[in-house]
Amino acid sequence: MTLELDSRLNSLGFAKPPAETRVVVAMSGGVDSSVVAALLADEGYDVVGVTLQLYDHGAALAKKGACCAGADIHDARRVAEERGFPHYVLDYENVFRDAVIDEFADSYLAGATPIPCVRCNERVKFKDLLATARDLDADCMATGHYIQRHAGPQGAELHRAVDAARDQSYFLFSTTREQLEFLRFPLGHLHSKAETRALAHRYGLIVADKPDSQDICFVPNGDYASVIKKLRPGAADPGEIVHADGRVLGTHEGIIHYTVGQRRGLGIGGLSDPLYVVRLDAEKRQVIVGPRELLATRAVPVREINWLGDAPFASRAEWPLSVKLRSTRPPTEAVLRPVSETEATVELLSPEEGVSPGQACVFYDPDGSRVYGGGWIWRG
Ligand SMILES: Nc1ncnc2c1ncn2[C@@H]1O[C@H](COP(=O)(O)OP(=O)(O)OP(=O)(O)O)[C@@H](O)[C@H]1O
Image 1 (cartoon, protein in one colour):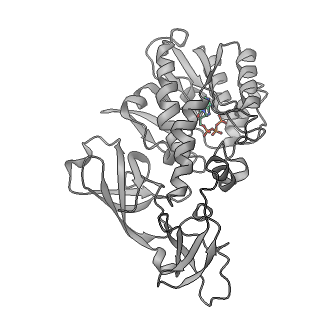
Image 2: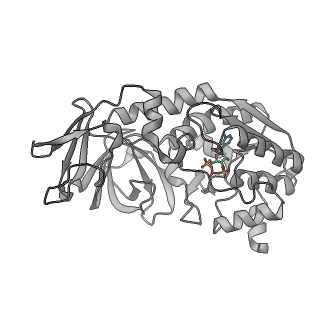
Image 3: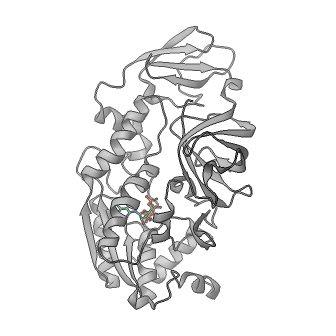
């Protein structure tokens, strides 16, 4: 660990001494947020750990070891005990089910590909948990997200994490400016997860070698279709697989099994050209397939926009930006044309494949480093 790194991590940006600065740390029981809590406690901050129980680990949805369930709560508590700061567990099962899981299931049934982690940040962690932190008289709330918060001339700014492989900006675009003022992300400056684990070992944390959590915490092994079937029994009805030219090519076991851009697993072999899912029609329960060229999208309709730029979002006819259309893709150049305060059309300079309703379109400045917000892709 370099001295330079330590000095960057030493301050949450408050004028008063750490001992007089109360920080609520959102603790999942994973290595990232445990390191945040240990680091801040070590620097002398008045740390209070809070863990949300998001679902019952004995219930059908959860898997052993999934975040937010029993074993993780136990780990978070152990870290707090060993580092000597208070820790609270709050039961958020009902809130999480209503605000995140239900929409996740309904979104798939409507033919979209949702991102529940964004809704969890927006509706649970940065709303109710943040309110709890204020109730606890905290000066700020810190999380283990890999993202940077910079103090800019117009207020707090959101920037991509230094470690591009860990960057979570795609999942945080809907953070409001007011929330951002109160939030801190002490891991955003780190260059790799190895640095986080090195810190965890330095503090002797029991979670130092705990495996990284999975993509969606309530979906065991990525098998989201099983989760949806449990939540909405009978809702995943079979239907037709239809070529974009109108030919019926076969049947499927429910549109929840498909996503735009998918090629494998269509079960319609024997055709000369490779076919891709180009659209899901929830009303007709049809999976529409076609050749690859039908996947290319240039104009992306976006709504529910949260803007984190300095000038009002709708104040200009167009903005040159770069955008990310999937969490795993790099930013790509675009021009954004506002339609209203919360809606826009994003025109991509080079067309992208597999742009799916329900995913986020996240806006960055043209060099792809500062996050200007984003919105939800819809069908238009
Ligand atoms: N159940 C929870 N209770 C409180 N805070 C949580 C909970 N789950 C996640 N968080 C907070 O949100 C951050 C990002 O969550 P995410 O699910 O992306 O975890 P992660 O990257 O696996 O981090 P960690 O190693 O801390 O689990 C966590 O670092 C933590 O600060």
